[in-house]
Image 1 (cartoon, rainbow, N blue to C red):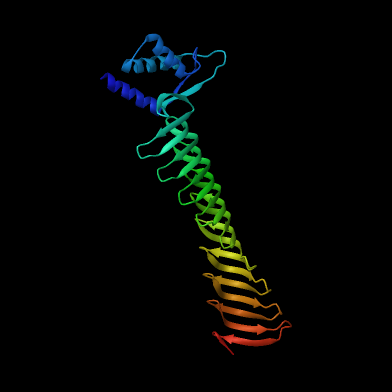
Image 2: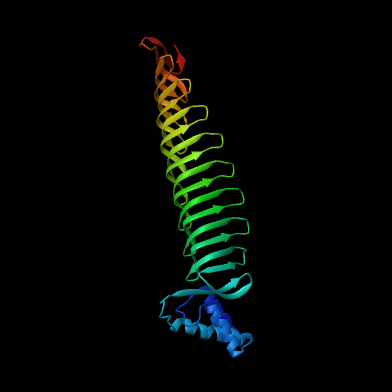
Length: 290
């Protein structure tokens, strides 16, 4: 029965902080060591008496000169069972290791969690979940630096993908939401609005060769009205559907010639051509040049 009581006492102390105010002892560690030495106790009795007496001292004594309230935790660190202030180190049966601050037996404050697969999180915690500023790295090479809320990315953050792509911007409930910039390894850049992890809203998309699209996106594609310019001076201003010219639009050449009308699946469908002074150059009707 005595062994069972000791085990139960240990579990309670592992899950909860010992809160109190110190008297003549600088730390609970000192209290435990001094009491066991004074009483010359050994074995289970030593452990039981040390916990009981030092806990009583901490819970009922006051350090009147300083009035400092301190929190201590009983746990293993570097293989040693003892009391520790503020910081905690524990390895779970599934191989996860947490080193950091606790409150009420839960990860709370600043801490580092490493997992058997090589992932590592360093940052803020609240009630056992990631919360606040933090950095997560994974074995595949990805890295997130930014804000968390309730264990998911939420707020401002930067995510670097294993292939070199990078997103910098706003997050909500673990997904890209709001304003953000996505840079691709090939040099393409998307700057604009996101919704639930997809490119949605007004954007500026630039290409390394000088091409540029300014306009609407939906579900990761050009959809709606936009302006597409080329480095040689050509430009298209009009409607898009599923990433291609579709609807009403005007295609203008550097010379001033332009084609105005309906486009379908990227191609001119019902179009009238004009030169730079407004003379008609020709027609396209139902996709066929007249």
